Length: 534
Image: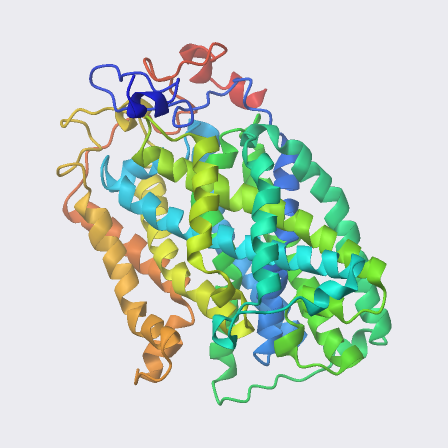
């Protein structure tokens, strides 16, 4: 038996004639399946797990470091979450009602081959985020080790300043990667316990940190009375919209890949309201925490917001080593939960579409961890400016994908989607389009991305001469690309209509030859209302 044969998944048997190669993780999860274990506490727990993370804290803290007062920073975070909540709810519906994940969902709009382009973009972002979050986790580990053994603060650094990372940080980064490896072995449907634990631990920790900041800064007055101070001459509105886009950035990936999680929802009707409450309320709470603690740290320790934007920097200012250790421990736990839920699962599903015979969720997670080292995340994390530029840079590409997908399913198809066609290898199938690519989706995506490219170039190299209008437009990169891509896609559909199959509003369609779940609900039951009203 050759090496390639040994690497094949047990669930990746030769495809049924006329169907694409698949594996268990690409197959739909029927309503009534034993894998559909997520109820509303699990769904809300997922968002709490997403809310309390260093990255979400830093979204609002970078807004304060740019010169916005804490009130405006919190408002920018709320508006950003309200905007990104729209595609999150709409895409989450597809996963809950159809039982498919994001890569299979992309086939409907981008084509059987074109979907690989969409998942490549989303997968690349997931790998970069996995590396960034792991580096943050390494910083947590560094705080914990230093709290136990203060001599670790004097660990010899053999790297130059241009590396933007110290030897101690690099060591802790790799140690944290090793800590995560056992959890990557678990399937996402079994991780409810971790999300539920985070729903208890992190809100308590966040509330404690919030109270500490206000007490030490002598209340809300000194913390929230600071005026907006923008020193580089950029209009306040532009900085505000940059912060809105920065708030969208961390959740722009989830807005696309919510089907990866909502397909495990036991009751699909719970998906909509849990997305709204989770994103607009729970996730924003961590933004409030970041803005408050950053502003309070300026008062308490007389340090600039450009330093206090990192919660681990604030923890190191404490004189209590036990407090430093538990702060590092709580933030490390938060990082692990976010890394698994938002990054490793996303990348695994994406890679599974490219290599269905060899990659499942477990193998994909380990590939993600390996590739994350190559993203050199310390260049992203070393300053508030670099972190903010990173958030705005990739958002415009994810916005273009979101605009196409939402418009395709909700406006062009009117919720009509046939699952068998999404797994059909027939060149006569409705999702084959032109040689497996839907040209409408690619034209719309390009139209959504191109207007923001000059602003992206300026963000990467500010020495280049770019018109102010392009820079200001880039401050709303995600919104611009989403709206333009969606509008162009709808126009192209009207000019050159696509073939649309499937019944409008159908809850779930079985897929003979692909759906191999032994407890799958019968097709006649799924097409009724009983499964939805259970």
